[in-house]
Figure 1 (cartoon, rainbow, N blue to C red):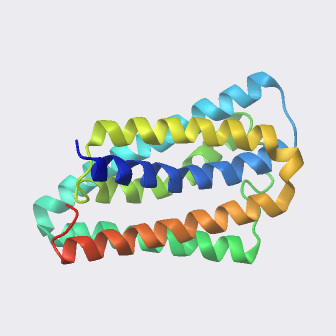
Figure 2: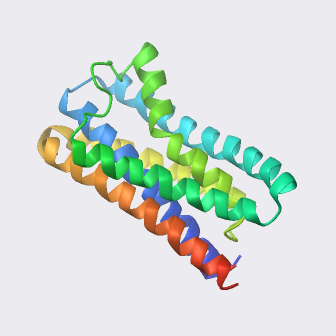
Length: 190
């Protein structure tokens, strides 16, 4: 594995981790037990990795039907998800809404909602020249670290940190999608 491929994996994991961090800050502001924080961390990491794998499966399927244009579709999905995240962050919607993100349906829906960007990453990961296993490990580690940090700092950071992290996560996903599209178009960095 090249340094460039590892760097791409880290950038992807970091951009996904910011979204997890934003939601975790919101949950952390509400407090919670150590067991609840462990459940949230495990659920978020599992959802991120699972949705990435589902995205990989969809990307392979699309690749069979669409050929090389599937890569651009995956990159467009990243830009689309990132743009939506920017829109939501600017609009000021609260991640998790009225759900209790520490257990039950709230935890499931929260984990699924933050992992939608992972679906887009998984769809495009086959086309950006990174090893899948390394990327999944980076995503899982970033998710656990982001959740832990967000929950721990939630009360201190407050709503400003939550909105800023969500905004930057969206910006990074848009830039990632555009950068990978340009690299593929120019036949560079693959």
